[in-house]
Length: 250
Ligand code: PEP
Image (cartoon, rainbow, N blue to C red; front, side, top):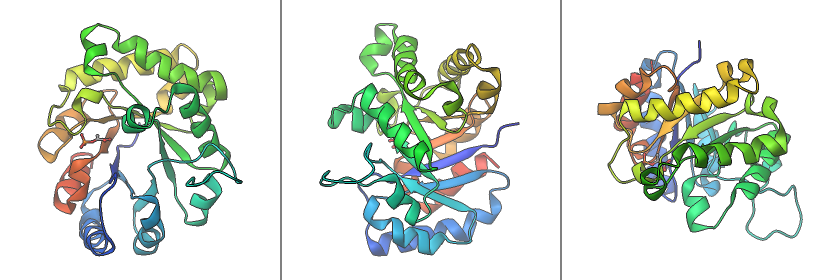
């Protein structure tokens, strides 16, 4: 039985004060979230603050990105070992905003995935199609290509140490959510593809759904057989909204 994981991606939001408030709201209600695993991914610069505020709580933390490099002349980058210094558990890789706004392709994303694993972080690998790709009927081809880039580099066993987030690009930050069945269909495709390579990995890996998840739609999404939680953008910036999603996974 896979546990539900609800991970908040704060993106480029927050300040020292707002983050203190947000964390205090989340920790105050985290006790009512049963078995659900919870994580937050702040901007890099706030990770030390979040680590201090969340130490000893049930809420884990991670980064929104990671360098594919270990160290050296790579201005602006943050390496896995640095994230380890602040006890990050997760590192998001291949978010659609990184792919589309910063031209991060499948191969680069796969190297970031490898860098996370190498330093003991759990990569949250984001995959998903654009609206145009869905309308062209190539959703499964796109998702398969994004997964294959990682599997080809790291091997299928590596997926067992990771989390996958299916995030249809057309549903991110748009208020449009994939219906539970639309999401389930792609999640089942992903799990089936993995099962064709390694059944144990397919059974084990958590596949999160992301795209305008809210308290009002989380329970029906999380009730689907292959949806093991959510990667949450906008609604993770409000403690009440975020907790209501976590409670849907309790
Ligand atoms: C995201 O960016 O990962 C995301 C799912 O955003 P939102 O929940 O705001 O759609």
